[in-house]
Image (cartoon, rainbow, N blue to C red; front, side, top):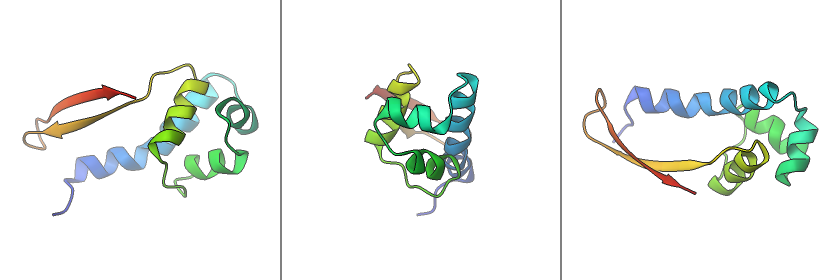
Length: 88
C-alpha cells in the first residue's frame, strides 16, 4: 500500500531539519561531521536529500547536536494519527 501523503512530506523534510538544526548552532557541515563521527560528504548528502539516512546516522547527528533521537510507530487514521515514540 502507498503511504499517506502527509507521511511522505515529513520524510522529505528531514534533510531540511538537519540543516536548520546545524545552522541554529552555527556549525559548519565539517564541524557537525566531526562531532558526529561521519564524513562531511555524508552530512552534505543528508541535507540535500540525496542520502537515505540510517537510524544510526541520525542518532549520531542528534547526539552531535545535543538532541535526543526518537523513532516511533503510528496508528489510526492519517488525519488524526496516534504516535508512540521510542527513544533511540
